Image (cartoon, protein in one colour):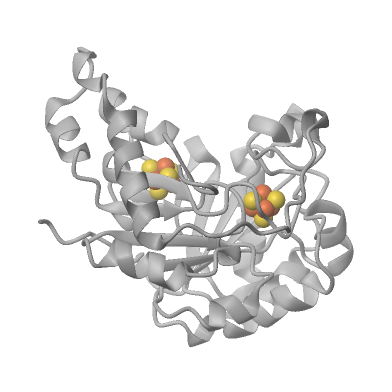
Length: 302
Ligand code: SF4
Ligand code: SF4
């Protein structure tokens, strides 16, 4: 929608409506998969070219563009309206599916949660704080997922998300360069600056690790040091998924099994003092925290 944003139907929206299954973020944090809009305000733009990324990157399929040449931005209000309209289109037709839960379908027509996570680096969108505000004032909860390479933008956010995610997908700079393939100078230093900022956020914070077999799963000690620096509320250790354009860069065997992710998380727990508090084997993800239980986030009902 607009010049640089997108909404995509999440697989879990479908699963929740049709098969009564929910995503791990509903399991962990209580947001409802069938009332969630998965979107990005920076579809084509990112400061990294991660090997495991499912988005099309410059050069894939011989299509090239400058991922750092930012466009003239659409206004936050246009993006909010566009997101709601796109989600309406996504939902049309489900009522005709005999397997759809009609109760959930009705609820889905009033989405309550925004996952700013689809693709691209959202901190490149200049009025990001205003976009978060525009969603919050309508009663939405928000997850913001950033790769952490723009610490100044995160520090200057005029409004915090409901929960902030920062991706940490390498234990050291060498692996970072190979796996996350930064497109801007000093990206590792900037990511480390972001980790230093995490404790200044009032919202719950998450360090997200996308784990790729034989690429970034060694040196758990390196990850532990980064966790120590950030002291986030949660850590989500999650397997790379062999989907989308990542299949051009990595083989199926690069996906670790759930047990491998769990073993990684166990070692990380031993090194950091975080505890494993939940897991979702179907998504190959393990949740760690110093809290006993994750904070449940439920949007106010209208
Ligand atoms: S939180 Fe993420 S996985 Fe869950 S429904 Fe929303 S976009 Fe999908
Ligand atoms: S930071 Fe996110 S959007 Fe950018 S290349 Fe990596 S996975 Fe893809």
